[in-house]
Length: 256
Image 1 (cartoon, rainbow, N blue to C red):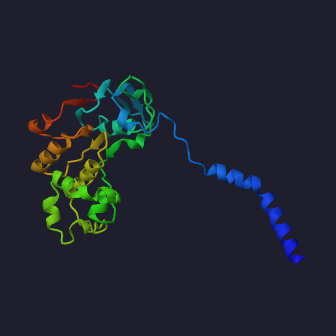
Image 2 (image 1 turned 135 degrees about the vertical axis):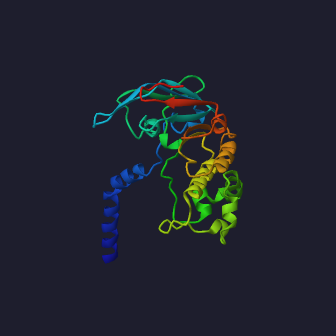
Image 3 (image 1 turned 90 degrees about the vertical axis):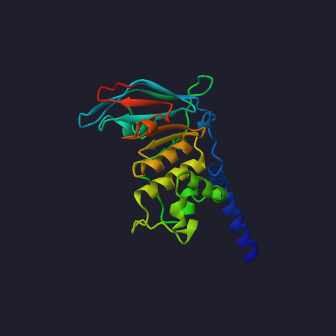
């Protein structure tokens, strides 16, 4: 009878939690992604119109209207304070504009609503991890390992790698800073190349790389099908000519 009593107790317990278990199961069901999400590869153009941002301290930035088409290579320039980096943050949704719109459209002219994190972005303060050269390039995706050497060669990091005894397994020490600024930038650019983002925003991505190295990087980067918008200062006429066109911001918000 003790065994029967224990069985009945447990059975009642199971029945009493049936609804709770059903609720938990529903919560664990796969999340349905809206059909208009994750469509970064379908972007045909970016349009910026009547865009402006008012800061709490009273500073005001306004931008010219412009359109960037899929596959274009755009150089974004302008004096300090004209809002180049801020423009990227607005495009990425990290800041909300005070007025105006930033919209992405597909080939049919339909507005796209997607996860802005899918846009490739290289910030000024490039991020590396205390791990191997290889993992910093692939972002721990071992399926990309066979492409590492190729992208490192494209950004001119091969000679740097040859000087490292452990090669691709060399550890990056963020505390000791065992990489120069230029080397760090090359690795971040290699990461962008290996992941082949259809749209790539680069903020001063070659500022610590010498002129010859910058030219090599641009030749390879601008030869990809990716749409590239790049902020840069003090580029030579030769380097500027490698882009399809230039958008120059001024304090009045004019554009060239």
